[in-house]
Length: 125
Image (cartoon, rainbow, N blue to C red):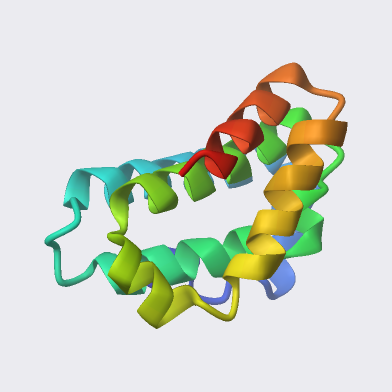
């Protein structure tokens, strides 16, 4: 997806560091786009896959800033709430076990109550 193309290159060092607010806002914006696109959008699998790949990075999932962890959990929540189950199985079956493990760990262990709450909500979808 164009907004995430190359985000993990040189510019990501800034996003993961001092520009963490921009990273969090980018994840939230893309999550809202996924939700607004709705389950019948032909672009949904492409955008959702790019978003899940971005949140799969350990440097995002376990970021030191709670805002980024909240944004990542929110993004995953929106993907799970929007993408129909059959498309999740078709396009994301390889990623679902690690995703489930991450949200479970986040729900139990994240020191930020909002990030933990969002991760716990992912477990119910």
